[in-house]
Image (cartoon, rainbow, N blue to C red; front, side):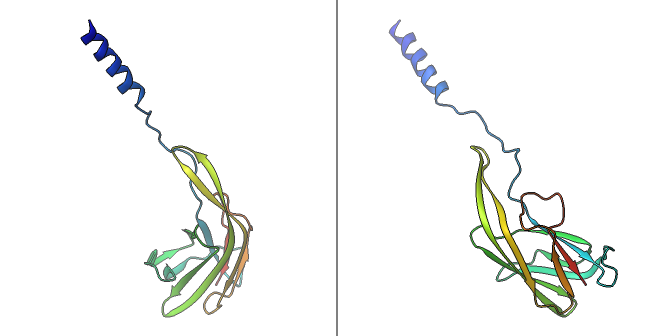
Length: 149
């Protein structure tokens, strides 16, 4: 009888020590969305051909592609991210400043970041101008920065 009680107690301890599997299905830290527009007709979305995008001192994110928008990550451990945007042989720097607000999502997801007080400047070589659509990045539902070229 003691043998059965021992196995029963051992089984209860093992089962109660298990955790349920948690899967993160919540939103994650949003990327910055750039949308490219025609400088002459600023309501017209205009694709950029042969664009290459890479952050300072990091690997390339986009390599020689044609696109009208791109989602790029911001560094959650800093308050500034610098991207190089190359079109052919001309390179512009896009300097993005922001504050980071970390929000606890859940035990399975951990934290996500929101970016506040967004500001951006560029070196204006092939990029004619930029316009911030919002100063807060909470999701990826719309473009955050309009790039006119």
